[in-house]
Length: 262
Image 1 (cartoon, rainbow, N blue to C red):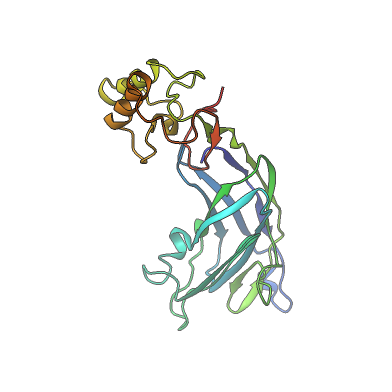
Image 2 (spheres, rainbow, N blue to C red):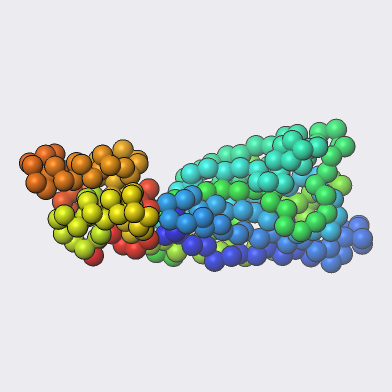
């Protein structure tokens, strides 16, 4: 979903634990990063940990404004899914709320496997959907769940609490707007539209700039059936394209490179 972009928030902790001078200035960094795989692809948010001592577990709450964002899925991330000798952590639990999600992890209940020291360790992940245009905050928080889940990394049974800095997500839903059948998004329905689809299917031409507009029958695929239905509608009184048609409409799954409603 290219229409959502996240300014990267960074959490930095250098907190000394009482009675443990070895922890003083201990460097821990959690960073939320976004992978934009291109139009129409899910926008993944990864929780990345950099630290220099093995950890036994971690917990976090991540909040957002439900007026602008919704959570599609959450996961352990690449490292969390392999931390227990190549398998997922021994114990973990997610909760998804209208305004955020939480994760609690214990790497190994027997104490054998730990999260090793290292950089770029993905210890959580989530996918968000943009609901409303605007700039929305995504923040670590200690308010979700009963009892509320704190943001901590656990070392030898002691919890280190990071300093927390919010990120921002900008949602532009114009990339979800289109008119089905207007394959060249010129605001008209004519023979140029099926020609554009044919060029893509059989002549190595570029796909329609808003692929959903070229999916005339709304079956989730672009093929010769879309061309036939559109030609039939234009010249033989056949059925019209599926909604949104003829007016502009919006679909969060629409994979438009540019707004499809000029």
